[in-house]
Length: 170
Image 1: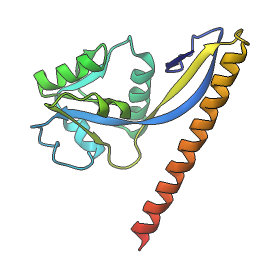
Image 2: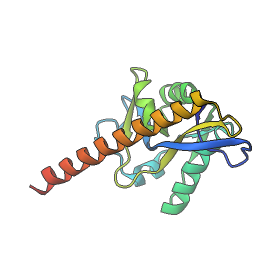
Image 3: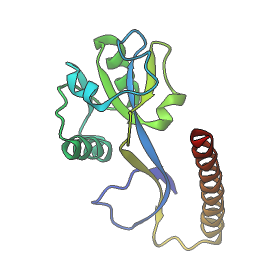
């Protein structure tokens, strides 16, 4: 069993969706946009240094490419990051910006911040993958418990969203 992104050329692996993670804008703390609570999409198009995921991260790369094509902007890709550590290093050293899944907020170095995109943000699926031929009781129990946890978290998120809408309407 592994936590991963769903790649199309995968055979023999079954996938279960855990969460749809929104992408966050990753930028240096001193960047002109760092003080904003959310980053307008058109501001990304104005950036001279966008750090794109390398081809070794095909799912994230595809999500970003599909998103910018859908919204009709062009990103000026000057660097490619092999992984999240490289992304943060390039953001810090070049002053550029990038996009990464929400979980990166838990790994940021002090000189880098994460901000949500304003409006609808692209998402990337975090999946749980396992060998289709594995029929062990242990895996079945694990998958059952994972389903319970995902359901619990979803219900909690729905409740929080409803509360925010109610407060916003007041």
